[in-house]
Length: 432
Ligand code: DLL
Image 1 (cartoon, rainbow, N blue to C red):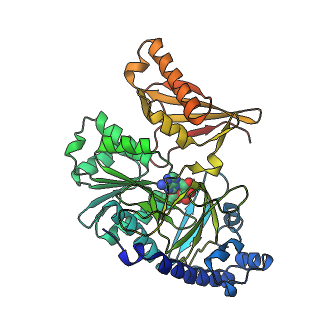
Image 2 (image 1 turned 90 degrees about the vertical axis):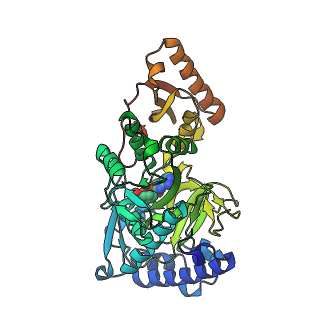
């Protein structure tokens, strides 16, 4: 049930002591080997040798995606390249790629952490794990692959894409755990339904999904269609990749691997910590990374911390499923909303399909959003009246539940683009 019980269930006091010691050695490492941090520490008068308490974390500088880009490709590495055994990169949607490296030891830790995430979701050595994340510079495929092997499961490194082949392999190789993005899981499910496959007869038991935002509604949809337990896992290449946090079978938030990552939740405007339990940007400091340590990395991801004990027995704090990213936020007639909130409302409305797209345009200083949503066949080809009622209902729910007014366009089933990796739900036509 646990991969590393002694770490995952550590008394908080011991964990905090371990975090402090690991932070001290990380600070020493970056101050000695990374000119970028040495300079920053000097400017901010940080004495890495005099760091005595986790409360002093706030005196340390932040690291941003721009800092990574400015030091492209290897400028922030803390070891010589000869000690780096693996390089990954995140393409991102804008700007230069960011490059990250791993020593042998980093790969060992990474494997243990993805093994934790897989174990927490229920995966054991008796499972057949189909990894439908891309293998390559993206961290998803390789990251979870090494963890699944460490668990001792039989791993199918199929990588992403080729949906029909994924399904055939899933049937023939008797896959019990599927690992991919939630949107791809849904595409696989819909394709199987379309092909008339009896999903109930498949041995599939678990789905571990991550890499992109999704909602509770989407979880329910995937669980119902695939007859599995679907858990959420989170990570980002800049701090490691998958394995930063993952849900246990209670599905009440993602346990953060706090013995390797120190997290803070800050207000992205004031950069001060938010009140306990409040939502803000998660900022992560790596505690064990050798090749590519980062100090107070601004993830831009929004979540809140759950510190109450979890029924599973892990003492690691949890983060709530991500609400969105600070850079995804839409301001619609003055109201701040995230695409995931729109998704949650759509999922509750009868007659709509779980496929949608948000078209964002700018009118003056505000965003105008058109929600394109696929509807069930009976409505699409039915009388205008039913369609009108559905449009009205979506508009009304968006207004009452999110306080926003949107335009709604009903579209035919399968008319919106499907994705094999991360879904792109927002089409941004603004010229910012
Ligand atoms: O997506 C790492 C990963 C791979 C995580 C596979 C989980 C599974 P990047 O490509 O660097 O790394 O993208 C990281 O994706 O900052 C979030 O905005 C988003 N993201 C990742 N996991 C989740 C999740 C990988 N569970 C960025 N829920 C992050 C919501 C997620 N968003």
